[in-house]
Image: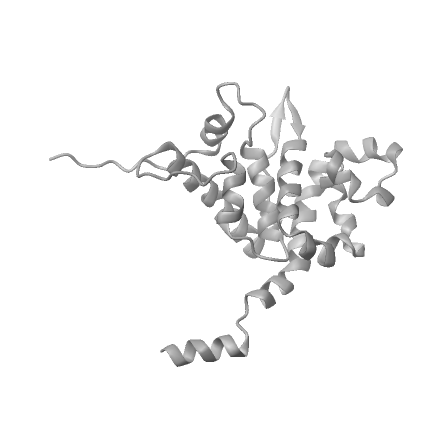
Length: 206
């Protein structure tokens, strides 16, 4: 009798190779995914997977057949999502982003691009919670790595200061993400809390 073997999720290195290998180096890779996940977990509003998963798979929903590479990729992505969610909630001092390493140097730009993509999914909520408040200074070490991001904080980032921020940005980003989640979490929790009318409807259905 044949027994189906369930393949495990990709490792994060395998996921990066699956998405960016074969010459597709401009595709979304593990570092950008990790930045996106950080923004999703820290965000002031929840974003459903159906909205953000297609951003990783070329604008389409992944086909998740049993044992397929796409299923293993999605499993790895959600594994990291759950890791980041648990770490930021339970032991925030242990949070460590997944940055790219090139020629022994840490490259933050892909991670930052993913984070900015996450902001774009809930722009209004980010604006009222972070971007249009004094808390937006927390985003400086993230946004300076992308031209679009820098445009969101022009008054906080004189051109001659940009280069000064970049070398130490990877040290500042973990604490920035932790602080952003702490600020945004009350709003997110309130959003998730059922309204009295919703609770009443739930009770009547029982």
